[in-house]
Image (cartoon, rainbow, N blue to C red; front, side, top):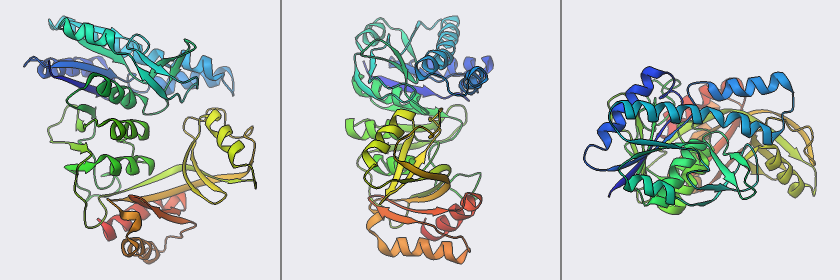
Length: 376
């Protein structure tokens, strides 16, 4: 049996009408005998609402209890979707992350998948059922409920696709694939038909919301082809795979305005890195003693992190293309475009498939427009 994995984000299952529409889409996907595994996020803003409840109780919620709380959202969505499929005569079975065999490390709120045991998923597929899995969650080796951080449902889908030998993993959202820039920022942005998984990973690290770092890294390392597509609208989407040819310039440009620039005390890099990881922060870039950190999962903040001398809000624009970091002519062209737009650059760097510039947070959209016009 050919197997595919589909992931539906929170906007795709935001209400009962959309859940019914997703059920129709899934039923069509299995009409030719394809086995379908579905990963769902929590409905709409459920996760944020649960986080708000926790913060109303305490400013510093315990991370273990936080995982117990926010893992509920995906379970609601999976059960409702299973009911909608059964109403259509499609046999379906909902499973939590732990029931699906997703084993993680001991971290809470930002766990990493260490093993997948998909035996139960396979049994239900062999029985002709659609298997619906709660995304974003797993179980640690200590049998604790864990969550995988923002974008964790994408990671759930990719690790299951790898474990099942799926033909591909389809990431369904309200966006038709990956674009050369955020269309809300750049009116001329165009959808990208194909890009490499390495480029996708570089774009995710730069802040692109349609792709998530852990999922792309796992897909690249385990040979999983990803299709990023729209849940409801027509469109071909974007295919991300290993063997995609290089481009002349950049393939895409993205901006991230929700970073912190951290200065680490001399000799304290190891302690700071461990403290940041324990707090749920993700290091995006490093330049000497400076770190640029994503704090979206750092629910307790940075006050207790050893080795952090100071931190301030920061923003970054990133251009991505095959080997772009080694193309000094293109890097210089991007810098010239920022200078021509009178956008100050505080720090910059280039490596691998990416070139990046730190810019004022209030100018990040202007910076995206300037760099895309120069390089894409």
